[in-house]
Amino acid sequence: MPDLAEDTSPRAAAAVAAGLHGIVGFPVRSGRRVVGMISLHTWAARDLDDGLVAVMNDVGSQIGEFVERKRAEVALQESEKRMRSVLDNVSDGLATDAAHIARRSGCRVAIELERVPLAPGATIDDVGFGEDYELLAATPDALGFATIGRCEEGSGVVLTLRGEPVELAGWEHFR
Image (tube, rainbow, N blue to C red; front, side, top):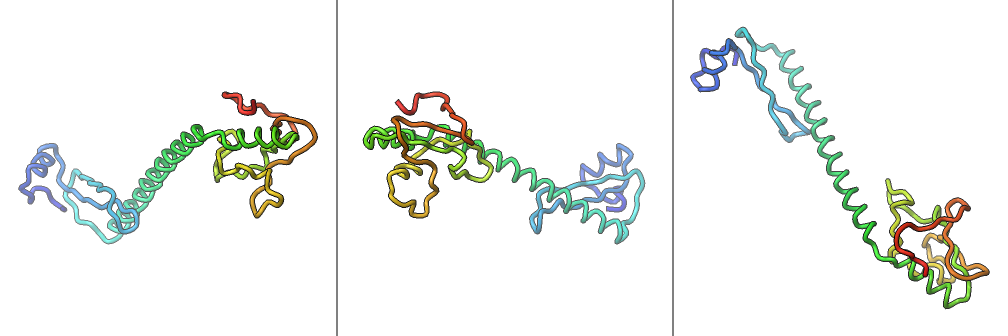
C-alpha cells in the first residue's frame, strides 16, 4: 500500500501515528508453498516499481528455501537422535550368537568391525549388534550378506578394528 493514510485499519492508524506512511508485504515461499510473510514499512509514501517487486519475490524465495533447509536439518537431527536411541537399545543378537557359535563349534569367532555394514552417517561406535547379523558366521556361503568375521583356531569371541583388538563398552557381551 503506497500510502497508509488511505487505510482505515487499526494497524495502519498505529503505523501512521509512529510516522510510517508506506507498507509493502511479500510472501516467503518454499516452492509453491507460503511459509511466511514479510512486511516492510517506509517513512514516505511511495509506489512500487516492477524491479523492486522482482527483488522482493527473489528475497522471499531465498528466505523460504533457507527456512525449509533449517526445518529439514532439525528433522534430520531428530531422526538421527531416534536412530541412536534405537541402536543404543538394540538387543545383543550378534554378541549372543557369536558366543554360542564359538562354544558349540569349538572355535574362536573373530569379528572384524570395519566390515560391518553401516547406515549412512553411522559410525562403528553406533553399532548395536542386533539380530540383523545373527548366524552369518554359521552359513556355508554368505548368500549375498556381508561377511564380517570368521571361525578360527581358539575359543571365545574376539573383536578387531583395523587389526587391533577392541573391547565393547558396557555389558560384558561375550561371557
